[in-house]
Image (cartoon, rainbow, N blue to C red; front, side):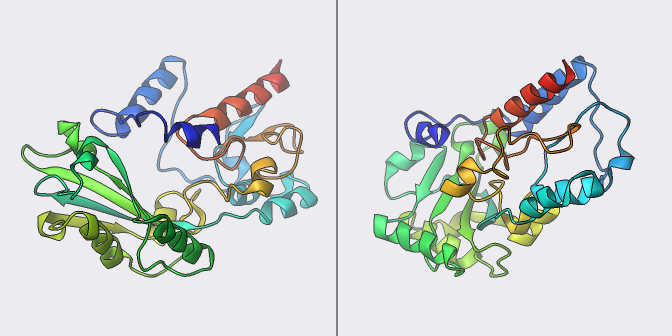
Length: 274
């Protein structure tokens, strides 16, 4: 909650060269500590992992159930199975011939622009999504980091992306609705699109199995799941199996680029090891 509020008070940072630069830095640091990262290797059973005193799962509760199998009590697994993942997102990436031509030039000074119209428009978009309908005039998160980081696009060109909320697992193509919404506030936007890539909920989940049904926030963050995330426990990062821990955005404090889920889970694991 504090993270969400802070994001509307101070500037939103962006990594020069793309967010993958953050991953590269973290990977380098992890390697300097003696850690090893293996990619392109899907784990479906604990037996695939090397012997260890603890295992931290940066996964959804559903994946924890799948991998741990009978290593978790049935009662706990049943509670995990009732975890709610909530709405999904539909994302578009664009290669652009120039900057987005916003009617309000102040938008040029923001790397992330919230596009929704009136408060009533935004409320209707979010209401539709929660009721299982794809919004006609979606509330958008529009990102235009190439305005500030020239490594994001070729010289003289720009890049951007946007996403909107849709019902979990939604199969509706939101391309036209998203681009029409931007066109409302940036006339001529369609004319500067050189190429686009669509990413519906099914592809978002295919790229990262944590994003169940295309939900990117690790699960609904309403009052119930804010405190019982993923279940109601004194130490939500611990499971009934003393060897297994959960450290993903499905634990407190939830989604966001803050790393606090992993931090608190690591502290719990260290208590077990010491």
